Image 1 (cartoon, helix red, strand yellow):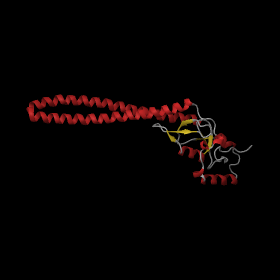
Image 2: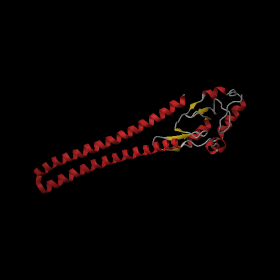
Image 3: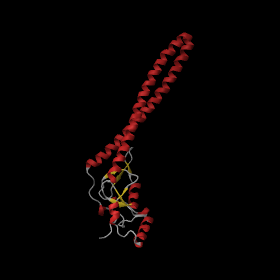
Image 4: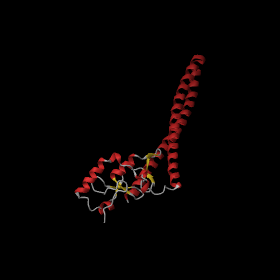
Amino acid sequence: MAAPQCPVCFEQYDQKVLVPKQFTCGHSLCAVCAAQVQAEGTSLGVFGNMLKCPTCRSVSTYQKELSTNYALLAVSNETNDPEVIERAQAAALRVATIKPAAKNNNIMLPAPSLLTEVKVFTKMVLGWFAVIVAIHCALLAIWNVIYGAVYVVVIVAYSIVYYGVYCSLYGLVENLLSWFVFFFYTYALASIGLVMILVGLARFIRYRGLGNSVNSH
């Protein structure tokens, strides 16, 4: 039985350079080609890049470290052959010229379903929406704090000049209450923004965790 080969560069897998790396869809590439696919990953939103398998074109969550396909590695019976090692070293030198199979029409399967593309696009939109809302809340909170402080200072200064110290003290208390209202209002907005950021981070960790668990089986 012939030793398994990478479907992109058609080099045989080995235990040193061309280690078989597995995507979440189940297909495998050698480590060199897999690294090239990762490097050319398209950014699809705040939750990280998305990987597209060059064999079946299915989309999965970006992973910095792909798991090794030990089943394919076990089938490779020529890993100690000097000729195989020489070919692996030559392939490593050609990293810059190796292109993902997504650009090679003779091994591509049909494009993924519309539902898959819609799911990816939805994740992208929701991710950017959460970031925009969080930034907006944070900026609004900062603006209200600054505005409240300036407002209190101006009103107190105006009261001292035109109404005397007693009236200015009354105005100070009144405006301090208004400032506290501003403070709690901005605190609430900042809390909402912080919660949205934490939710986004939790979703990101969950997506990465699901991708790793699927890819490890």
